[in-house]
Length: 344
Image (cartoon, rainbow, N blue to C red; front, side, top):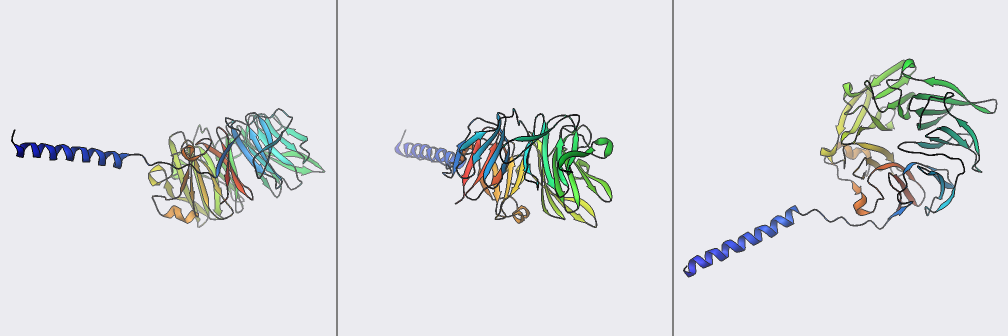
């Protein structure tokens, strides 16, 4: 082999090495930096509901209801009643100061000394886990596995005054989320046997939004009103679903856009939606963490370029089921653990 041939081989070999290095650089996964503002608390505990009463945070878990410090996340005490909150649940407050907890066995109300003063279960309210609560000017709505119940304060006592099921207008008996949109009540269904989607009640009667109208999945996980005429809808199960934008024109609701993983949302199933005091939009997913947008208008430009939070940079788990904002931090209720995020 002459010198020219050897030189050619050396050049070819060098090019192969350089090409290999370049390929590794181009295909290498980006290194995710740990967010030092994230702190994991209650590691391994399933957090299904969070509520800030202004003094302390109530955390509903698979192991019971805990009262925690709203600044540090330190556990102050566990409530005595044997209440478990798994998969889905909610905590809210009514105008009389009672804290209401939806759980596996129904609905409980506590005074500010943590005494359980009411408990409602089947047959007073529809049977099964209470998934969602909505306090309104007339009382309290509770959505369960078999319908929705409305409670009101009558002569000093809370009573059930209305029950809704498929027989009275709901598209499905499983009620996963209830929201007020203007003068309308929106009931989002789950575990749909028929069309699922959203049942909307107003003075004009019942109307519906479902997959036939453009929602990508019949299971509704979250509803976030942006105004009386614009609503965000999170839907899906496992690897299916997305985020829908619904807009109202001429008294009719229409799905005007759908976004999913192809548009920059970390995962297909949108688990929860939250708007903070600064107007930032938090979109959580079933298994890929959170994306945070500066405002909902950023949904108009895809792919989305918001901040991503996941286990890789400090979340306790990638399934974020609920979010609350306190003065100094946010709390993320995850499938495994509570995550505190300092405000910076």
